[in-house]
Length: 67
Image 1 (cartoon, helix red, strand yellow):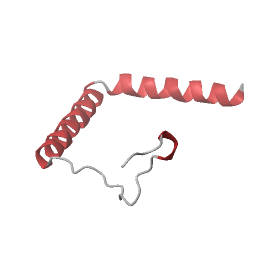
Image 2 (cartoon, one colour):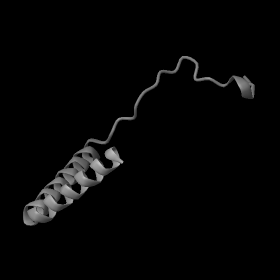
Image 3 (cartoon, rainbow, N blue to C red):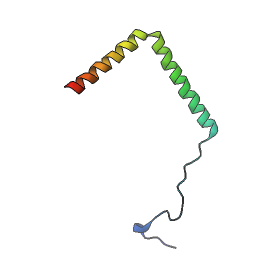
Image 4 (tube, rainbow, N blue to C red):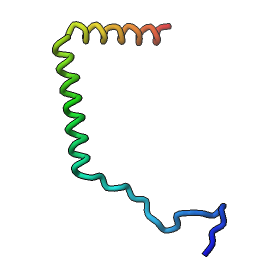
């Protein structure tokens, strides 16, 4: 059976998503949780720095909107 280059289709094949490895998914979620915890820990250690950064972002946003 030959196919012309212009008429290649998937025919009746259904689209499926690949199944993720459960161990890999568990490890990924664990890493994401550790990163979130580390991020939260850094903000608790330096709350003034976090507030200052949020304030700078707010000022920059308002300048973009106003200007």
